[in-house]
Amino acid sequence: MKNHFLKAILIIAITLSSCSKDDERNYTEENFLDGFLTTSQFSGTTDSTIDGGNYEFGIEFTPLVKGKITALKVKIPDVNNAVRVTIWDKVTTTVMRSETLNITSANSEQSIDIADLELEANHQYAITMNSNDWYNHRRADNSDVSYPITSGNIKIDNYKWVSGTAQNYPTNIATSYFAGDVSFNFIQMN
Image (cartoon, rainbow, N blue to C red; front, top):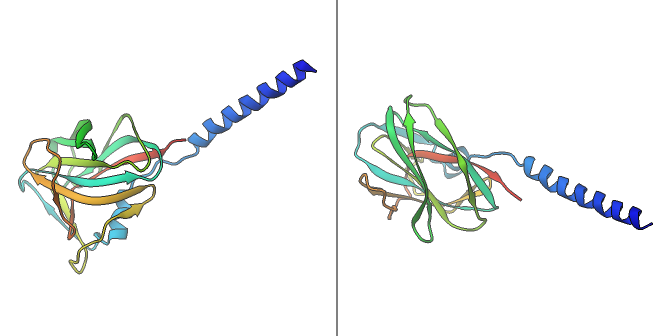
């Protein structure tokens, strides 16, 4: 009887362990950018700038669930072998991860896989890129947008920018446009 009881406990433990691993594998990878551009209506007008001066620009965001960033993505209208992408802890404005992307093809999204970067639910972060080439998205009526905007499991809190090539946390907020197509692939974790 005691052996049957121990076997039953062992089977239950293995089953529960397997379920949690299966659940994590069933989460789909997501990218917030297209949903953000649609919901914000910043897909109304898009202009491109080439060699327009360097800026550190991107979004402040909050994951609604615990997850991890698995890849970084950039799309610019020019070739550039040194586009710096930075993930920041917004609360402390410290760099969590910084990668340099070699953009070898203009007007096409390019991606690099990174070592997984875990993010906590409901903690504020930022992703920025530093480039002198970018797309500038506006609403068709040129009106301002109200933040936050949610796309999947990512809540976009603000768009921010600062001029220069230094890796400085952006301090300027803009609500009438979104510039710099920088994003990431995100997958929810248990």
